[in-house]
Structure formats: C-alpha cells, structure tokens
Length: 191
Ligand code: HEC
Image 1 (tube, protein in one colour):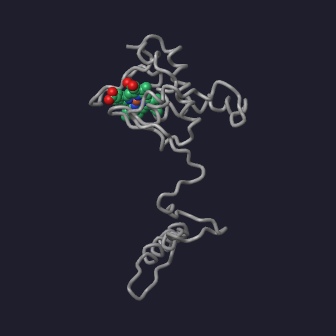
Image 2 (image 1 turned 135 degrees about the horizontal axis):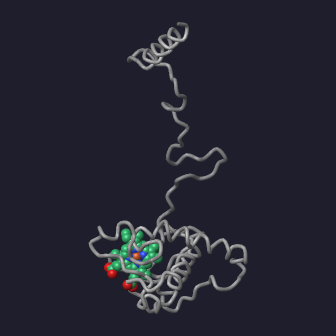
Image 3 (image 1 turned 90 degrees about the horizontal axis):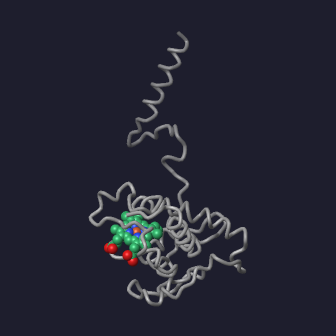
C-alpha cells in the first residue's frame, strides 16, 4: 500500500512539476536540460582556449597540409610514393604497426559499404547504386600505382566522392591504400 502511495505522490509531483505557467517556474527534474552548459559562439572555453572561431579569411591552419593536386591531375599523383613502407622520423615502427590496423578499420568504415570488405565490388549498397562500385581486386586496379589510389581516396573519382575530410590524416589515407593492396593479394580475382 505504501508503495502505491509513494508512486501516486511521485507521479503527481512529476506531472505538477512540469506544468510551468507564465508566472510559475517549474521544478527542473533533470538538471542541465533547460540551461545547458553549452558554450556560446565566440566564447572562450573554461581554460581560455579558442572555440569554434572561424579562421580569418585566406589563412590556413598550421596543422593543415593541403593536397596539392586537382582531381584531374592524375599524372602528378602517379608520382607520389607511399610513406608507409619504411620507418621515418614521423613514422616509427610502432606507428606503422598501428596504421596497419587503422587501414583495415577505416577501409571497412568508409569503403566497404560500396566496394565490399573484400573489395569485390559487392558492398551492402552496391546493388542500389546508379553506377556499381567496381571490384578493386581486378588487374585494372592492381596495375594502379599507390599514388593513383591515394589520389582517388583523397579527391574522389567520377561519381565517387573524396575522403580527405572524413580521413584528414594523410597517413591514414595511405593506410587505406595499403589495405586495398593487401586485399588485392588475398581476395582472389573478383569480377
Ligand atoms: C558510396 C559508395 C562508394 C564508397 C563509400 C567508396 N566508393 Fe570507390 N567508387 C564508387 C563508385 C561508384 C566508383 C566508380 C566511379 C566512377 O567511375 O564514376 C568508385 C571508384 C573507385 C575506384 C576506381 C577509380 C578509377 O580510377 O577508376 C577506386 C580505386 C575506389 N573507388 C576506391 C575507394 C576507396 C579506397 C574507398 C574508401 C576510402 C571508396 N572507394 C569508397 C563508390 C564508392
């Protein structure tokens, strides 16, 4: 009986609590719902950092390394060499190992849906596309240079969009290319 009473009291409190009028403040049952801790545009963060401020016109962020070639400039992209095949100052042995996994994960997130996780051109939405995504394990794409594949991933090709904004780290895009190379060795002939 006591339980029923408390349920009735509690639910009437909830119902009444929510009925605010023009001169009556309601009871805020869930904190932070009405006055969230969001930061207003142009406002500094708690630690004084800059948040969401647009860059001044014609400026480029220091971290951003623009991709130098236009979509149609395949010839220049052909000359690019994948940096993932040797250890360097930026790419330690550990980082290279990490990128192997990243390549597969990002491929399966961004490319598999169309080209298929084995790159056979049979991703889950391939049938529904106006132009069917090609299998990437045929001799045509086996003969593509790493640079050309990187160019397609970065800028897109024909109906396919580029992935430079979804995968801004160029090493991760190279890792996707390396994963495609692996699939070309393991996925058989394809179609
Ligand atoms: C939304 C579907 C879709 C996704 C996602 C997608 N592609 Fe494509 N891809 C296509 C289609 C369609 C084509 C054929 C485009 C054309 O010829 O107009 C294509 C073409 C290609 C080509 C051949 C380009 C050429 O020169 O013929 C490569 C290589 C490729 N994609 C790799 C990738 C990789 C790697 C990813 C992930 C980063 C990816 N694609 C993500 C649909 C997709």
